[in-house]
Amino acid sequence: MGAIISRITVAVFASLVVIDTIGAATLTVVTTTEDLASLTREVGGDRVNVEALARGYQDPHFVEPKPSFILRLQRANLLIVVGRDLELGWLPPLVQQSRNARIQPGAQGYLDASLSARILEIPTGQITRAMGDVHPLGNPHYWLEPGNGRRMAQAIAKKLAELSPVDAAYFSQRYADFDRRLAEAERRWDSMMAPYKGLKIVSYHRSWPNFAERFGMDVMGFVEPRPGIPPSAVHTRDLIQEMRRQNVRIVLVEPYFDLKTPNAIARESGARVLVMPPSVGGVKEATNYLKLFDYNINLLVTAARQIP
Ligand SMILES: [Zn+2]
Image 1 (tube, rainbow, N blue to C red):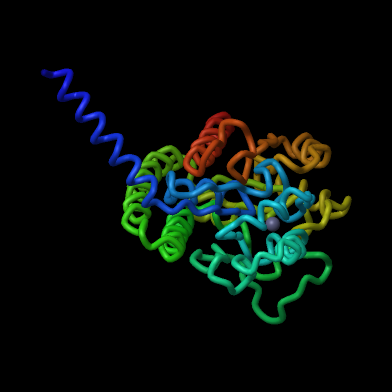
Image 2 (cartoon, rainbow, N blue to C red):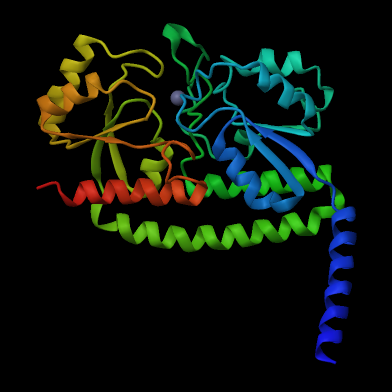
């Protein structure tokens, strides 16, 4: 009797699953970065196929375009970008060449995640890329703040629901679950970082203003004289002097930069180089958005603990 009931249950269940699968639209989503892909997976669950173009260990300002990117863009229902000109150097021609009307800027299948985020370092006065500065529209590394991650996830859930209204409740439930897990993680990160409020660091690129503000770090200088401009001898000398003066003991380097100058700076100033990934996929442990912060906060706390 029990076996029959369970067999019937299995049959009913299986048919529900089939109906469910038929009812669910599957959206094909292309994101420029792995961070956006991770947030899209969080809220999109099994109703979306998500692929990122850039890998997390690549500099998102300078990604080498591949023919396969165009093929992926051709099939996409939705393209999600970081925006603020982060992808300006490589994405626009690819989107154009895809000839996919759904994902052109301004179309329903184009989402600029920066429109939902809190952006720092917005230049006042004339907007310019003078001297090769790659942050002319404010800091495009805004995803490195959990509050922005939450806002981005919410904007993505809303866009997915717009494109697939039948799944709106599903996306909204997935967002609520992500929001809860993120809040829980934030409490953990806050308590880990609390003893190191005001920790002074230098970073290679201007990747961490949102992260630093959120977790109480003081970014005191940059290995690059300006975002996108390679280090120069004069700037490096001044930076070393300032680091000695302020007793800065940590130099953060994104995984895609050469370590030669940072190592020399660290040697001269008594600091230590930490290779800290700004993106999901930047190191193998950072497999999703939450794990990226887990990895980075562990790395920082471990190093800060060892500062005499
Ligand atoms: Zn940048």
